Length: 263
Image 1 (tube, rainbow, N blue to C red):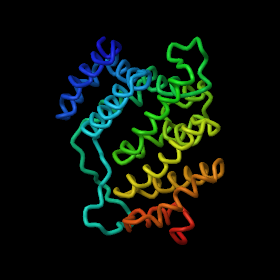
Image 2 (image 1 turned 90 degrees about the vertical axis):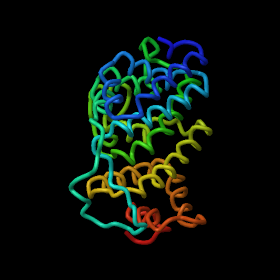
Image 3 (image 1 turned 135 degrees about the horizontal axis):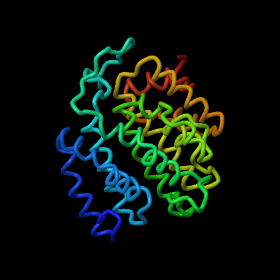
Image 4 (image 1 turned 90 degrees about the horizontal axis):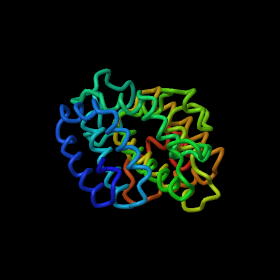
């Protein structure tokens, strides 16, 4: 496959696949080719070429946005929307690509395998430390944009036993990436993780969360804050940023961030 070839060939292959992001039917058709999706995921996380990794990140974000069957309701009027969230969410995609990535055991677990430090060296998806750090950064780069589309899928536990085989607690992909994946002794990855939390709340503040989604997100922030006090500090600092939106401050307040006021 060209995706696994040299960077120029890989970029060309990614450019061709980008056409599938133009319509839900094309994205759904792409989802019927598991070997191609598996190679796309592997190229995204394992390519040492920065340009290929970034292009693949953008491609996956576009494909999953097009394919999303029930995207979250966005805040269009600039006002803070309270609960309950609307029962019907407008969607256009079929969700086949989401189900392929999160429901196909080989594809789904390959993400954990390439990003976890607990992956044994004889695993087909094992990556050496330097490339694993790149893979982790790419995953953290993608997740906030996906959380806007379907936080429920990202926070859900799909194949817990398979996840646990890579040294995780089996609580889903977003929990793994936010709480368990990064070695905080790695300064660069630690900074990347802190930036991820800032980007996550900024993105999610633009959509309507259900009660369960908000409770899950609050639990995630609290757990991450216990492990790393800098997480709370980063989120607290956002409140004082110039141009911060009322929606973002309200979300931070609901998540228990002290600088945003009492939840």
